[in-house]
Length: 476
Ligand code: ADP
Ligand code: MG
Ligand code: ZN
Image (cartoon, rainbow, N blue to C red):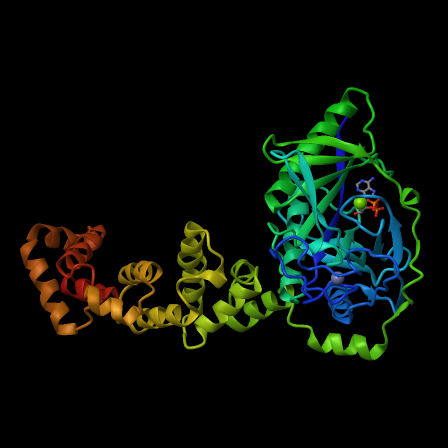
């Protein structure tokens, strides 16, 4: 029997506020353990939470960016459970009445083109702390710096069917959150974390099968690998005539497999109830309007504009808008250029290739947009040819020197002098009479032989735009 995977994702994104969601402690990552704590986030008795309005603004922004309806009234609930990193014994979260609902996000799939993935809800909640296990001293310690850091949880509809679609959805969501600048998206620091729910059903069956929830997926690659593993595992279980158990499973990136962590808890296990310390959150029209006004151009809009304004292919426009930093870099680069297509190619192959090799992101590029632009201007003006430009670029990436300086130091100025090149071409034709005769006889493939000779003579610096017609006319 053939089975169809059904996948729904829950993403926890840390909001980029300066302070925590219910107290004024700093959210800064990497501080010494428990430096960022106060009686509120340490869960002392008698303290009162005060909602951070910046967190609400960010949550509204995320809701608007994913076409959600923003709730004019939402509420905070207590989700009760005991864990040493949760000093209050409950997590404040929005359960019954989230800030945003009924959104969607469009992804590109290899198999089926564009596909819309529903977003069930976005709610705000506080993060828990961290346990640090010290195997040497056989001790566990708790760091409460992260307790009370604001999160949004973005819950998708079970609309995803493959690991690749899940990856595309997550990358798109990640891109959007970075565009609207509400989350730094740092997956290693846990600012963007994903749980994946997966079930299988016989092809053609409407009803969903029993799902497993995968945790500990800390990179896009791991999400895809874990989902594929889980699809395989559940397929074996069902093919053997057994039942998939509803449970939480942990992905082990070293063993490349998932293992059972615990049975799945149900909502009633948490005994949710409205937090009596927090009044309902009312968001008025004015608040929504002011956030709407702050909304930047979103990835899909930017891609459409790049196609329209710069006449780029949809593929190029997509690559160049995958991150807002790359898109900004590209727009700065082309400010004073006329050959946009050439700049796009250089950005996507040479620049991104260099960054990839060095393991850097665009904001860490040793070649600034201004310097990159200067290099491409030299290429456009014909001061250097494409080969020389590649050499200059490599040197820029290595030394950070200005392109003009490198061109002078390495003597890479293109030879564009008509009479100088004419002399060289004539000389080469005279030195190679057999090839010249053969060319004139119709062996026009020998053109590249003559071009090669010219380049050899000029150490690669001849301007091909001038040399090409010269060779052709002299051999006509
Ligand atoms: P919980 O919070 O207990 O994990 P939710 O009902 O909020 O449960 O669902 C969480 C996620 O699981 C959602 O993304 C949803 O789309 C997905 N989901 C629900 N049922 C299934 C299923 N049978 N198979 C796959 N995913 C599912
Ligand atoms: Mg869940
Ligand atoms: Zn605090």
